[in-house]
Image 1 (cartoon, rainbow, N blue to C red):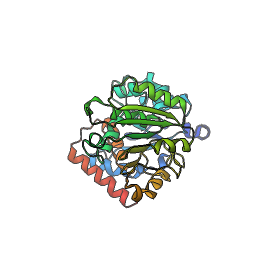
Image 2 (image 1 turned 90 degrees about the vertical axis):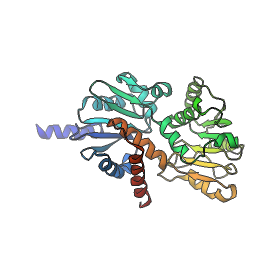
Image 3 (image 1 turned 135 degrees about the vertical axis):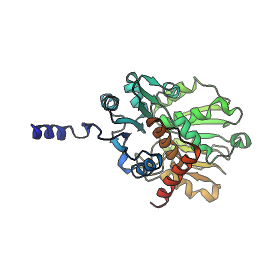
Image 4 (image 1 turned 180 degrees about the vertical axis):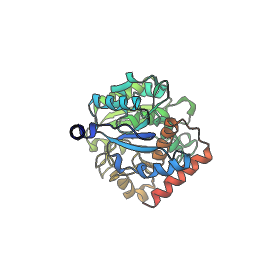
Length: 329
């Protein structure tokens, strides 16, 4: 009987989800084993008093079948020691496939149509969209207060997936008043995703001008990028350079003078950042990778999953732990 069960599990392969033996947070992504979080999490757990917990990756192909997302959400919901998950590339697809399985969806999740954080308590399974919070916190780390008001700069967001929707939604929040980009420009090679971000933006109010470009090729992105005002921010939110090799622009694209190049990725071939670095002196660029975004994104979800209220001083300790690890890679 045991050999038959073992054979059955082997046939299932990655589709077999084993009950957790200790409190577990899952990382639902594409290549989770390559992420620094697998090494950083145990260090953070010790700092937060979560020594008995563990992290486990669940890898899925991009745009996996809906039933696969439902299997995973069902498993987390029903398994006692499976406490929740962070979702990266699959945020939109998981929401579309599983939104009916959650007792609670936060306002961002419902508005943006994505779930980046899964948590639960004795009563309900909750889905949150944390990216508008974490991307905003990350940007505030390198953009000065009143930057947009002082410079009149624009923001070009490359990609129209979940991270792009979240970040642009942060920029459009009414709490920023007049300190918003003069224009928010979105380029995407897929028309359905571009139409979806337009639909979401239409439900929001902002004093920024909004422009959208269907750009199936990198050369078409170059044309848009070459027209940006000085001091503008260019964001690679496509996943190219991490989940898939490459860049959304060609080597001929010109970054804006005194501009900022920000890649949401922090690992992979990071070709977009290399292209920015090649122009850093000539265009007097500031260049940022996705490391701080990574820290905010993960800590926001960990706090939610394990129901923690963390003082700012403790958060600074987590930043130092992660940065020390990153610098010694």
